[in-house]
Length: 502
Image (cartoon, rainbow, N blue to C red; front, side):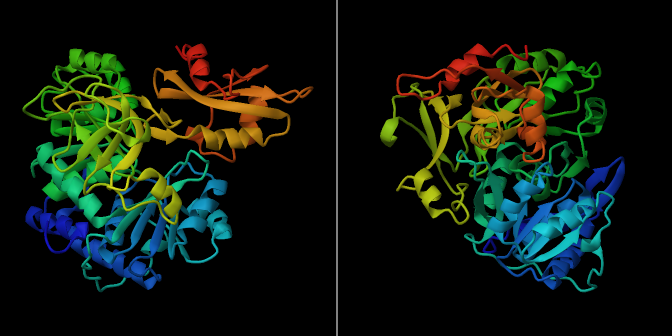
């Protein structure tokens, strides 16, 4: 790592080596070249400074995926701002919390949302960015460029909000050193080269699409085939001119079902990577049967970036496992109270390394709860570790649902449903779903004498929760199963309704 820990400085050095080579290619046309990166991010960084964004200030961004959105992220890093990307599905009610918590000096939203977001903003400058590269953000771009700022390793680069089990989202603070250490490790581990071409199908408001995918390409000077959405036929059509694909299990399920997926179509691809949610062993096998290629599964979290990976070379990619800890990452499997368990025994996975975040934004008590005194972060994922170090995830200690690669915490949905008139209580669970991995299901008990319905509940919460959090089914029942202590038995509900989407 160089003296300058600003990860953008490393991207810039790679861009200077790449020269006129395309960085982002969309629809067969170069949307951004490496030669343009310095000038365009320099101008945009100067614009952010003119809007009032100072070093360490937060910039909240809720816009659609576009090349200009990528430039905005890079410009924020260049200027020393703290980038806060938000899922475009978040509602106004959810956005109000993020704005109040982050207290940004600059907010960038979609043009159509300007009035609504402006009504929520108590301070800071609001500008817009549209999908076609227009918007007030790009008005009055300065001619002069802002120099890439020196950053200390501990300086914040981004805050990514992850849903909280208590219903309050937590802002995971990621430093320049966190991002850079993980990116450099994965560049070597997965064999990134300047001649690589990545097919980018992921959103750029979370770790997978923004950091894991784009950082690898930027550090190696590779080109990116930029897809704003996911069309299996279009993605397979790009295989002949690409070498890598990163996706979530839902993507791979849909690709496997596509008639265009053949061994010949995949013959130029060197690596398929899956993450953000567990990939079923059967999905591994079906994909390999059709393509002759074995998916590489890895495991990470918002708070840590990547933690483990199956081998790219020199080992077997075992279906159902997430591989070995990264070279600079240490993991341990612990039981109650934090004592390590025997090899092969299940326990909660804890992780330490330069990738581990700096804590939760303005939540020191929550940070303290989830960090051991020796610096290990308690992931909440239940895993086993073989004697050779290979990690297998077996469950989740936290009450988490992963639907289509996105984290959904039941508590937030339960609070919204429980507040509705006529509802006595609810329990939200995830059950197997053939496309999404897990489908969100709400099991609801009505107040005595009240009449409630699935349609009524879904309609009432539609404006409060992002679409991906909303239940796919609402089941009205007489009572929830409980143990002797009165605790709702969600495991029993998951078992009862496991075939709901079969």
